[in-house]
View 1: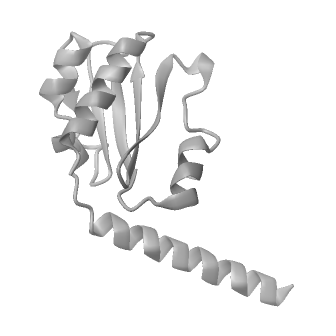
View 2: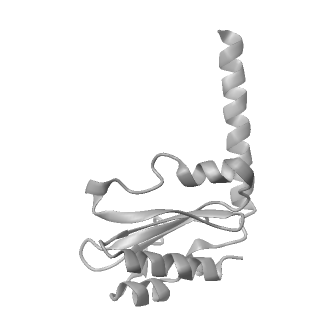
Length: 136
């Protein structure tokens, strides 16, 4: 049992270090890939970036009263079956009762998620297209 715990701790530590290394080597800044201006144009309201919640892997947008969204780069180095699994994993879309629509998407080796407070799938798809155009 001790050997199992040690292997688990070492494995978790290595996974964390791998994620931290990939985050620090990030090529895409999510708030530059999808700017507040482009988010606002697509959503038809003025949105700002919540700088206190955003970081090098995610960007949060605030609009008027209970509106806004989130764009997160999950990995920039997806390949093979692991990348495919990330797209299909549980939780890759918001729960139906959340008032959000979104999903997990891929552009080359980049896997990202987008969610917005809306019911308009066309707006979601327009945001996804804008993100795909701007990813490096």
